[in-house]
Image 1 (cartoon, one colour):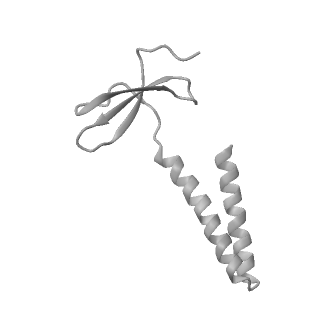
Image 2 (cartoon, one colour):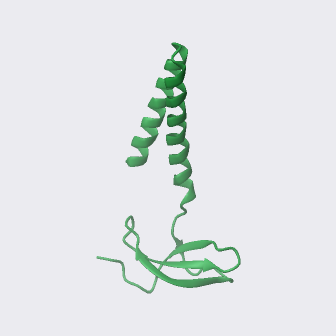
Image 3 (cartoon, helix red, strand yellow):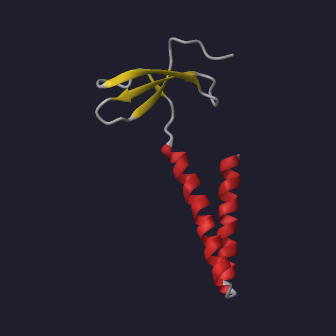
Length: 101
């Protein structure tokens, strides 16, 4: 819901910026176009940046970091794994822990 609102505001800012540029209000048009672009691109990038939770151990080279938390969307307990060589982090549903109530 928040993503949809942010993308909607971004598109509105882009449209208003284009209209401002067309009527000769260049400064406001550039600001609105920039703001709209940041909102739309940033929201779309954020959606693809955060990957879904994995199931099971990620494989060789991955170590349990000892971090655990409850995912607010699914309510599942999540274990964080890190890869020592790359520093990448993966979030895996903790199959051993019961889901949070």
